Length: 380
Picture: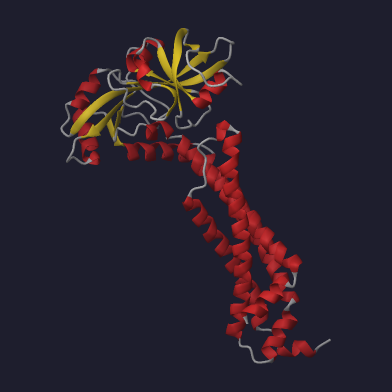
């Protein structure tokens, strides 16, 4: 009966292609938008994730997410170091500054200051130069995308000078940093140098990054830091979740992407449901003939589900393939979209949505088949 079901399906190429197109369109729209949503949300915590050496972040209790900092005094660093279970604690500076290239190009820049002695927190992936050269006076490392924004259409090279807050610095390394939420260049320098370049303030320590000592649980140490210092101590995952939660609750990102994903589901369900219903209605005589020769309702149900399943698998494969191609090639064309990808969880979630669509369409249509009178074959 499976062969008969497939012959019926492929025998009506218009309806079959309509089913495949509807499912492929819904899959592409949902997967592409969900992938973009995950990627953009991941950008909000890229600077936290980049600091892989630290599993603890300490900050002022009023800090709600990573982009807005409340500076602390340098003495807080020593208080964190004194907490039991802290293996090491180092300063980390983060601020937005203005950079100006010699050609007069202005860019809002994300300025990061890392520990002078260890350079902990600097990007690990260096495309050009050596990160240890940050120890030179007035030296900075800049990410690849930021270099392109300050010097458009210029090959990557070292030794170029740029002004940050009216202080001239020299590029000694070009890195591949995690893409920030905005398109700002990511500039890294030593902590002491960053404090000189930045606008002077009474307190300038943005964060303390630390690591739990062996044998100590990071969450327990974070709680101990909060208790002993009065600061906000979070694990890296905790800080990531806190930042993402802020953006989910206080921006239009989830609403905008959620509406688009929902529209993809609704439009896909409408197209697939209507097309499959018409396909079943137009084949009622064939189903009636099968019932007339003794084929039971269970076998008919399996035939309808097989037809729906073949259309769903074909459409989903095309749609998810197009979505994967988008995330594979578009970031190569536009550096602003770097780092975006199609997570496996998104592909699985979209597959579940497609299964729900095709199941609803199948069971809405199969009712006409199960109640069809075999005598329909002998009517005009």
